[in-house]
View 1 (tube, helix red, strand yellow):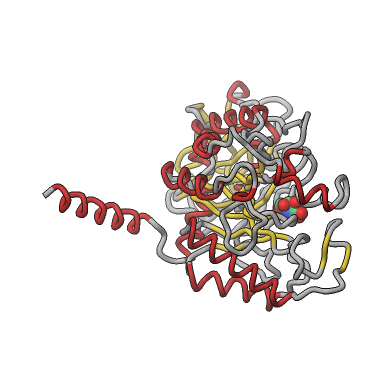
View 2: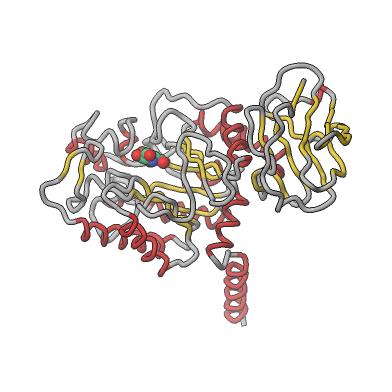
Length: 427
Ligand code: FHN
C-alpha cells in the first residue's frame, strides 16, 4: 500500500514539474524575459591567484604554473545552497555558472578530459551540487561554456589570450569535443535555462550554428546566446547597458566588481549603480546578468553578498515594476526609463535636480486613468497638448529611483515605442 502511494506521489510530482516547465523555446524565452535578473558566476582554480580567469594564463602566470593550479584547488567552504540563497536574496531568478572558461578547466565530472574538478584535491562535482541546490530552490540554471579553449591541444589558438597559433591542431575534432561536453552538461545537470557560450575564436556562423543544432537535439527549448559564432536567441552587450531593443532579446552582462574572477581588495559598484544597471536594462527591454567571483575557499566575497542583498531589499518593495515587464513604451532617456505590464506604465526617474517635479508624458493613443507615486504617494495628471502633465510633491522623490505609476484605460503592451518629448521633465 505504502509503495503504491509513494509511486503515485512521485508520478504526480513529475507531472507537476512538467506542467510548470516551459514547453517551447519561445515560452522559455518569455519566462527568461520576465525574470529580468540573473547571477553570473566566474570561478576556477585561478581564484587561488586572484587574477583574471583565462586571461592571466601565459600573462601574469606561465602556462605551466596556471595549468597546475587545479592541483592546489580545494574550496572547502563551497556551499551551493549558500550561493543559491545569495542569488535569491538579491532577487535574481537564474544563475549562469562557468562550466569551462577559456583556460579549459572543467568544473564538473566530465568523461572527456582529466583536466577537471574531480582530479583536484576537492574531488566534488561542483556543477552537480549547484544544479541540485538550484532545483531545490526553484532557481533556473544555465552554464557559461567558453567556445574557445586555449588549453585544448586541438584548438588552433593558445595563451596568452589566443594570440599564439598552434602548429598542430584539429578544429573539427575540437568542435566535436565542445559538442560532446555541451551534451554531457545538459544530460547531467539539465534541463537548463541557457547555454551561454563565449569568445568564438575560429568559429564562423556555420560552425557555431552546428553547436546550437546539436544541443537542441537533446533539449529543444534551451536558450543559446550569440557567442557560438552564430546569432543564437539573444544579444549580449557587455559591461554596458544595451540600447533599447524590443525586436530581439538581449541581456547585459556586467561585473559587480572590477574583474570577472575574484580579485583581492576588490571594490564593488554602489547600490545606486547596481540598481540603475538593472532598471536601465529593463527599461531597454533587456535583462541584467550580474557577475560575482567566488573566493578560492568557495565563498562569495562578503562585500558582493552585501550589495546583492541591498538590491534584493529594493526589489522586494519595487520588483513589480521590473519583473514580468517589458521595456517602454517610452524609450530610455538620460534622466530615466519606462517599463510596462498590462495596462500600467512605470516611469523610473533615475536622475533628479530642481524644484517641484512635473513630467510631460506623450499621448500613447490610450487614455490615462490614474497616476500615483510608487509606495502610495499622491500625484495628479491633466490633459495637455499632445499628452498629459503629471505633478507630484517634491517630498515624494526617492534617492535612487522615483517610480511614477500610470494606469491606462486598457492594455499598453502593443504601443509602438516612442520618445519622451524633449521637455518631458521639468523641476
Ligand atoms: O573573455 C571573457 C571574459 O573573461 C568574461 O567571461 C566575459 C563575460 O561575458 N566574456 C569574455 C570577454 O568578452
